Length: 88
Image (tube, rainbow, N blue to C red):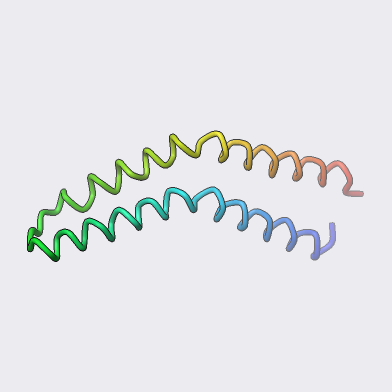
């Protein structure tokens, strides 16, 4: 196993993690921004108003993107297993 192969596997792993996490992170960020703008406009500073919509948005994004996430992770895992089979 060469150092280049290890770096390539690590790069692909980080790239896959970022791709898989992006929908949930973006939905939480967008909902958080909307709630923050609403709170600034109305001067309502309720703590639960920031967390509950974000949690719901992340859960909905997770449910919506679950098939794509599973497909991406399966493709990555199969690629790892194929590369393990070719290591000498």
